Structures are given as C-alpha cells and as structure tokens.
View 1: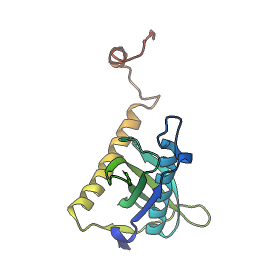
View 2: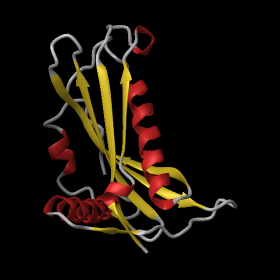
View 3: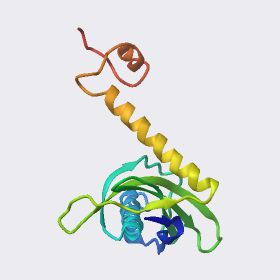
Amino acid sequence: MFKNIEESQVTITQLMLPSHSNFSGKIHGGFILGLMDQIAFACASKHSRHYCVTASVNKVDFLNPIEVGELVTLKASVNFTGRTSMVIGVRVESENIQTGEKKHCNSSYFTMVAKDEEGRNVEVPGLILKTKDSIRRFARSIERQEQAKHRVSRFKRAEFELGDYPEIIKKYNALVEFNN
C-alpha cells in the first residue's frame, strides 16, 4: 500500500507564553523539542495508522531565538518510509504578531517506528513521490542513513584506529596526554 505525502501532513500553531521561556527570556529549546516530538508522532501515526515511537532525532540546530508572545508554527511531513520506520521532516517557524515578521527557527528529522498493540514493529505504507522535492527529501534520507552507518562503524571501540586523531585534536580545545 502507498499513500500520498499530503494525507499525513500535520501543522500546529501555538502562542508562546512566559511559562515556556528560559532564564534569558527566550523560549526554552526543550519546550520546542517537545512540540517537535509531538508533531512527528502525530504525522507518523497518521501515516501508519499505528502508535509510533521516536527511534532517533537527526541534527537539531536552533537557528533563531523565539520570543515570548510570538506564534510558533510546526509543520511535519513524511520524507521517507522504510519497512517499519518513517523519517518525519519537522520545520519550526515563528511569527511576530505585531510586525508579521517570520523566522525559520529549526528543521529536524525524526525517525519514527510504528508499533502494534503488543509493541512489535509493524509495516508502514510506502510513499507516492510526485514532485522533485519529495524525491529529493526521500533520497536525502537514504543518504543520511548511509552516512550514519559509516560514522558509527568507524568509531566503534573495537574498530577505532587512532591514526592522526591525536594531532587533529590538538588543534581544538583539548589537551592530549595519551601515550601508547
């Protein structure tokens, strides 16, 4: 079975309140991450028609601060489908209500896994890719997965080679005192 991407897309908008702020008066990153996880769950569950859990979150960069009193809009869409998993793209934008100015605050990718009533992984519908952007997003997810596999294997304890890393590390804010 295959589904159109639009069938599962979810958008939420929420007013940012003082209770959402951190000690510097900006909206707390943890609060935004919680909203992102909620919308990723909603999108994945809507696509799969099953309960979904977060398996991983790929790269969270906070690009612009969000102010108290701004409207925050989160948009989620299925970018990739595997056998039992989905990559959900989440975009966060804020809007100043008085000026109408909009800022892109964050984009991230949540890998969600569909579960049945007993907690076992369950197959998810595939995606119908109709646009160049949908193909680009799907291909980007494949590439990201391949990079992650390579990155993880290179740094496994049993397979790690010291090589030039001590010299490279010395260029950063660390003191290498390791001796063979």
